[in-house]
Image (cartoon, rainbow, N blue to C red; front, side, top):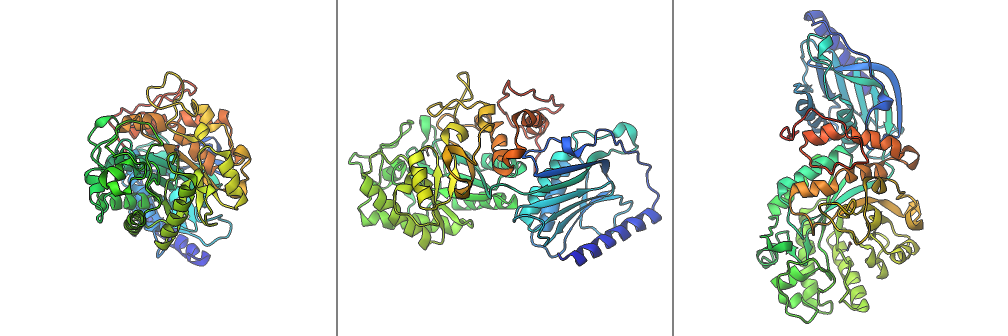
Length: 539
Ligand code: ACM
């Protein structure tokens, strides 16, 4: 929306408000202005700039949401916010409704072409006693902005001072945009399968902390988890088990599309990974011609790595890979396809390089950008392809020499499956123990000397060898995933452990409402919450 249209809309809103003020007698409202310091709110990730004006905006039954007309996706963002306000406060806030009796305060979600808003995900928030104005260039920016609004709505209303319930939002101004355009987590649904409902809950959590990517590790030695119409045995045989011998599972193509649509409503991109040429035992059990390690493949329920490989010199293997990439790419609107490429210990180096270069062409033929674990940097890959750094400095240096963008997922700092300490109930420790502070106190901007110019963003992978339920997933992911959101969104100058740990402590009521069984790290003085684990902030 151009500025003139924006001003017209504001005038219209004002007129509606005056009209309703004249025609209806309003209830007397007393707003409690104490404790209204926007700068000391518990926002995560920390916004770029916050200026407090120490007043209060009353969110109550006389509040309505308006969004820019004809701005793609903005009304959906307004409705999403209304739904979340309902879940948190039980208020029924109307969206884009013309005649609202007794309208007092508005939340206006405005599409702005202002060049002051940085990037597609930047936003500005102006909060006064009468209005909350959220400006963003795109619906994605508006969506990030409403997460900030959600976070600054107080947990409790000030009902002792008023005849009706009021949630006082502190006034001021926020200017915000992410440091990195890629802010992700990965979920391994191959070692243990996670249901669509579990994945959606994880997406909800990521959305609240302004993530924009969920990478799904869909295949591994122990399981193939995505329906492929042209190769049905992949799921029928390869999806039939998991680590520990449970019954496994897989997503039908319809379920995968449902996950993508759910993520898209939250402006989160799904990146599919089919790990190859190693980590392919489940595929080779289903179709033994794929196998290149000379041993008859059998379903595998253990946790060792590095034993499987495709036969990289067979044309039929590439016909198979073409079908896989074609079918999954057709279902996936995002620009990326992740080919794995890690730990192919029984693939000869030359065969590995040959494979990666051929598969990169297949990925590109189907209109996608290739991502691979950092080993792919040893091949002669295209400048658009993206290595994901998980541990090899040498591979990172190769990638830098080639001028590639890198996703930062160092196992020692960013692997969500690493145990917190020796007492952790779940997880591994082959890379490190990663307590809550260690997960936060490092700099993806300068890790292992990788220049910031080469960094696309940060991703926190959650491998699932030791977890099989959503509660176990949550134990490893939270609170650390909350810290990674700040590492990828907020600038280094804005990050400080002492300050962060207070804001993190105050996430407890939200985590409880979401029924998230987080690891209650003793480093954090968790805020007591009145919520029970049964009150889920449902959609
Ligand atoms: C990995 O941890 N094998 C990428």
